[in-house]
Length: 258
Image (cartoon, rainbow, N blue to C red; front, top):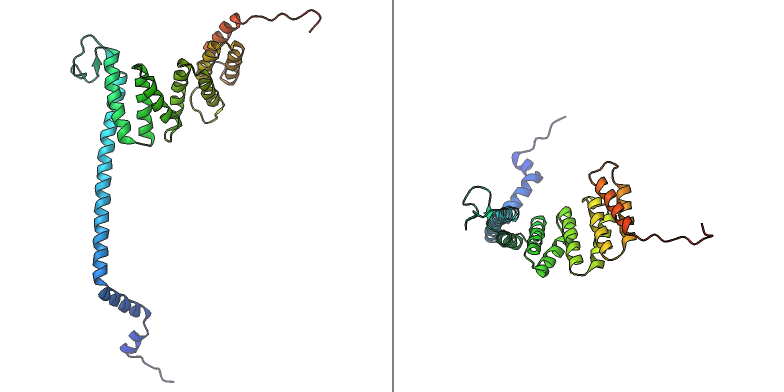
């Protein structure tokens, strides 16, 4: 039986890969003008993305430096020998008085918050900006920034810290109910990673100031029961409960009733 031999031309004519390559080459030849424009567009977009990324990185680095300076100023040492330049005498900043250091910190935190915008770093900057403005007596500005940090997106711990500071501001400005609601919500929130004992002590102080001593004692007992027996706050909680109990009038039980 003879074998049929195919010529090279016949083999190529049945090759699907070759057919596809030929079609692709024809497409490129027919559309080379459009393809050239598309390639240019891709290159422009790539360069634009690179430039934007470089700009954002530079801006983030600058904002991070501002945030770092603000935190250094916020916790700076007060010294009568301080100069106009807080770093004139070393790596640690020195200020002549609290007002000067908080004003310097406010400037840095404000710039950092504006540069970072939303997100964790921006939330942290607004939290510290709110604390700084509290020290400067700028309660309305402080309230705005603390509320933004407390209820905005970003770092959860910073959000709870902002709520705690905000509760103190609410209480000092006469909004005890708002402060109470914030602190009770934090105690009940399983995701709150701040010490519940510390929150309970703050809430008890506010309730006591409102004339609700029994409620204050109950709050302290609840957080005390939920905390470790020999925890950091155990003695403080016990002492505060005993102090409040001395001020609570004892209600006499009528004769004949258990």
